[in-house]
Length: 623
Image (cartoon, rainbow, N blue to C red; front, side, top):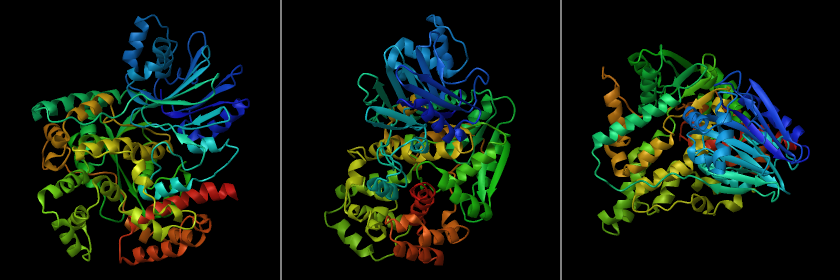
């Protein structure tokens, strides 16, 4: 069908509301828009469409034969051909080749249980006029977003926060607890939204709303499984199963009536995707990577080697300092909810670059969380075992001796492991680069009362048990992956009207990965199964596959092309005058970073990103 923006409402002025929300989300679907209104129930559905499959017949909203069931879909149902065949055999009639119509007939067969049959990335809404029931569901991992508000018996929902706020009577009332969470995590976690009165439908959840009750009923239908204990399966068999499932997933994500490319960093994840994709299509595969004029994180050389190995039609984007100065603040300002992932702007630039040739790109998101790619998993597991290895007073004595030493790299991690913190707290500190410890120093009066709160740890909802690695991987699947990685991927690509597909996030592959003990995943530097598979699939020719991601040289940007904007924010941004952050403290940190005395990128970037967003949305609307 195609990625788009969907929205809906249950109120008397629904058609005007739908039109306003659709207009706000035009970038998500520039090819088409549609509106359906049930006048009797005051229920409306809207859609913006980016045409990918069934270009002529995929207009949304879409109904069954008697127009009693209507649907809108944001995303792709990858197994829709098989589902369509099953429904045809059961006697259903189809007017289009679209996956949205499969949803309509699947609902007729199974009701709300249709979610268990779906493989894909999606948020969809189905209106059952006969029952007066609305079903809204989000995919298992959170690849596609959904915000909603339910007050006074009215329900409004949309793919982006700004669409809701375009029709919200109460405006932009910012939640201090969520601003606090954003600074620490770098993203808005869980079901929260940064604006009061609005929620996010979490991954693997559905929302039911009925005319009679007029209350949202939110239910979980899927959660990432816990990782298994050792079952003794030979590694060779595990690698073969990984290959079969990933190959099947890549093939499903190449189904399209428009050109498809691959975002290639040259690391294991995207290399495997590119190799398998190149084997599944006719003609050269289009691949895309990004590089920079400054810094040491340029990955063009690695990506170029992989592209040459598979004879790809390879394209490279160089992000210049001029582009950084002019475009990065604008990118951070336009996003509907703030994001502090330092790769966001580079990914959006790459998406615009690739969009000249393709409407669909395939990426490697999710592999780190499913196959143990983050080094912190191994370090934290070692830290949890330290008390059993060492006499009781040794960690404290060693930690005291190294407390005055500048902590860099492995020494920093070892010092943290000896600090006595519990594993979950240490994990959160490492993920956030210890930003929670700087809250009292940086916060203004509107946030200061939150600085002693431990609610951020409690909200993580994790219980790290005997299997430390497996617990942390599952925690990342529940929080970091949807809140940061997939939010970044969706917003960055949708600003360019480009669909990004993620083969690692197939239910089959995820459930298989969880059936493999975490102790197997972390062997040989992590991602053991993917590393073995890469050695099988990628010809040697001197190419050394290592962990590579689409990173950005943000430290150099904040000392160079973004420094004037950063200083301007400290002087003029409403983020400071409204009392959220302390102007003097942040200004001093900016100058320390500029001088090279200390690399404060991980502290300054979330504040920089938040100020870009706040001035563009909140301050402008308040003014």
